[in-house]
Amino acid sequence: MRKGPANSDRGANKFVTEALGTLKGTGTTGPVACRFDSAYYGYPAVSAALAGYADVTVMVRRDTAVKHAFAQIPEDAWTTIKYTNAVYEEDTHTWVSVAEVVEIESTAFSSRKKVEQVPGRLVPRRIPELNPTATEGLPTLFDTHRFHALFTTIDAATLDAVAADKINRKNARIEQVNADLKDSALVHLISGKFAANSAWLLCAVMAYNLARTAGILAAGQFAKARTGTIRARIITIPARTASSARRIVLQLPEAWPCQTAVEHLFTATHAPPQVAQHPSTQPNRRNQGNENVEHHRQRGRPFVLPQNAQPPKSGIQPFSQPNRWIEV
Image: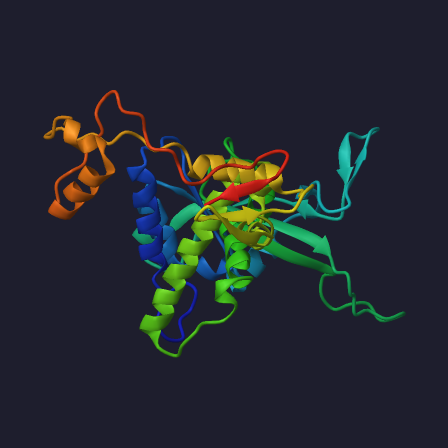
């Protein structure tokens, strides 16, 4: 979290450095590429990525230098790409699409010192203007295309213009995470105090991670489901509580469509307990009884089950096929 009104690129170099350091700590090998939005098209973020031995693909703003580069592109240099509602022409083996790309050599941040200039490639993409302003008998003053461009330091032999544009148009995973958080805890912040909002954000992220973990353990359709779906169909279980023999029983509905997913989650999180072991304590016969267990807990001494002892029965039982109940 950043305090006060801040631009998106404020502190971006620190974020990039920390992210690359974390990635390096995991032991990941192979080439790394940082993909940025146009808000992060600046020397601090790009230089931080290059300093971390990573390549960069970043959307660029349409400043004067970029517009001048667009004007220098010949008409026959554009390449048609697979775009929305594109049709593949079998005779010519090309995509009939309204989107085209081209690549040109470019140097980012040319106004800075020579050692701070970053050589690379500019990959513009153009699509026809869907709302032309021309009227009959009065042509438009400017080009009838909309232009978007990205700057990349990846070599053309590794990633050509078509592949670079396709990869850059993919939504980043963090965008889905942000949308998921805004649909839950971050729909609004709780306070006007920065410290309180920071704590709220931390709790929101932990809740998101726990919900996503529950979805992965439940498997099936919930492995990639949004946290809202996981909360509605797995965490918020429709059940009725009842007590019998000093036990609380959750009575679940019959023919419940999410039963299999909940069983997977229940089995993964309520596995039989492991026998406790401690290297400095040998098994003792006195530790077999419940009274001795409580005695040792009160005295602060570690409790160890003997080798031939069976682990205690769990108080929670999984679904029963005929009755569909859980004992807690």
